[in-house]
Image (tube, rainbow, N blue to C red):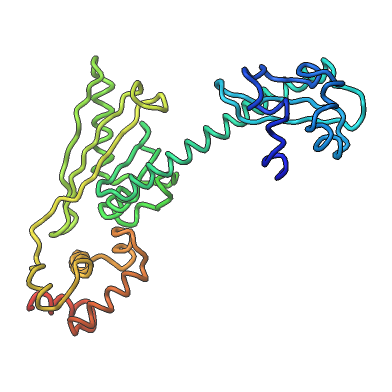
Length: 305
């Protein structure tokens, strides 16, 4: 192959660079040059003959007018390739073309899917897509986290595809309302149900629920789309003051804000998309800087600093 790529490809009558236009699918040596003339060429005597090749046939695999590859068939005996071999070659080419196209499509879907999942999982808005029976079709991490905060211990996480998924009661009510409204409306234009849900004195969410018409859904069925956003509530800690007095970083103050909300280490890690070990390391630094020994002591330090 190194010899071919460095020199002999220029002399190969089957090579695409020497054919204009490309044949439809199959090409035998006799269709390009006579055997007598072919055996006089440098390509035959210095490259083909030493490999004990006497006959050649090429199958060109194409898709959408683009050449995907060439399959070279060789024979070490004098017998040539006949019409039945060309028919077989055309069948092989069609299957290979379809396989390559399908593989390429799957790669593109996977690449785009991974990209969009990354975007959805790392933005600040929770997104949940449910079917009309409120079963999850897709849910990003933020939505799963907010649902868990609204209805603790009623949600198991499995990338939004767990059959045991339990939608928090307020969201379930919104879906039921929209479904009823859509069923009695002559014009499919249900409103967006919007509500605020407070989980604690420092934690509140804006929830928007609407129906995606089947005409705009890739699954050809109506779906619920729920978006969830954090609504800032006036902080009970003075970030600027504790940054100066305790020498804390922005990330450490962020950790403290979640401690004030009652978050566990695992919940902080999930919310900030970091490991639980990283959260523990931040806490060690916070305790060292503040002189606190535990979370209760830390909250007292922060409130009095």
